Amino acid sequence: MIFSFEQHDEFVVARLPSSLSLANAAAVRSQLERHIQDESAELIVDLSGVEFIDSSGLAALLSTCRAARSWGGDIVLAGPLPRVQALIELTRLDDVVDVVADITEASSRLASRREAA
Amino acid sequence: MFHELLLIGAAPEAGHEAVRWVEGSCSRFGLRGPAVEQLSACVVEAVNNAIEHAYGTIAGDIQLTLSADRGLVTVVVADRGPGPRDHEVLPPEPDAPRGRGRWIMREWCDSVEHERGTFGFRTILTKQCASQAATHTAKPARTGSGRPS
Image (tube, rainbow over all chains, first blue to last red; front, side, top):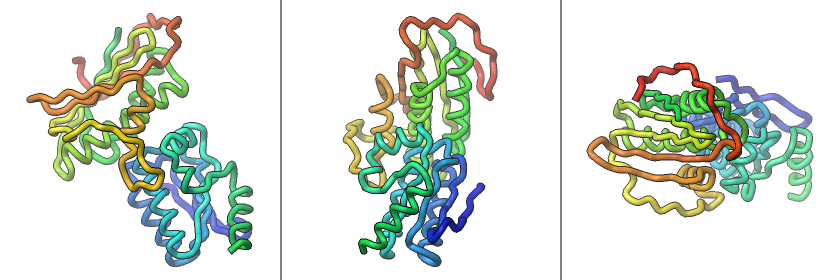
């Protein structure tokens, strides 16, 4: 599973594997939540490399969002491909998690939220 | 009309294998694009339900059958479990931890039917994946790990 954390300006970007599904959703969620708990509760989740996602993957993202908020932070989902974006919209995940076009916009979103807090 | 069949083990990776198979089969029928992607997303949810609810931690098989007729694609996902107790599908709350799979199937397929019997449980997903004007006459190549039905 290709998975990485990289620094982008003042925030960390988690780059997810090309598939986020029942097969790896629990492991991805665990990695993200560990980072939130141990490193930073503000996290950009880069979906631009995710070619496939299912309801288990969506649930993992939602769980990660809850974990971040419970630690006083938040996550922003960045750059979903059209088929992933379609599933996010169908299930209204974007009602509860910010979804933006790219990492730069995600970084701006987290920065403005930090200033408002 | 053409048929293809895939027999896969009820493992967490089965969903991704099902996606590749559905999209590959549809491509051989000359079908691709968002409608096929939506159908494959629905098939994955049916496969995931079979993995989680029919078998749990027990080993088992899931049989997928795909047929296409003038762009109308039907995929049958069959397992040996009892199936869900009810088939009511409500829109999931955005922050609900579960319950999206059946909603995805309902919203993205033209029809979702269920059959229960001595064979186990079947979910039958149907979706028009091409314009009605399109016809597909080329016989697809036999591929996959399944057997003819």
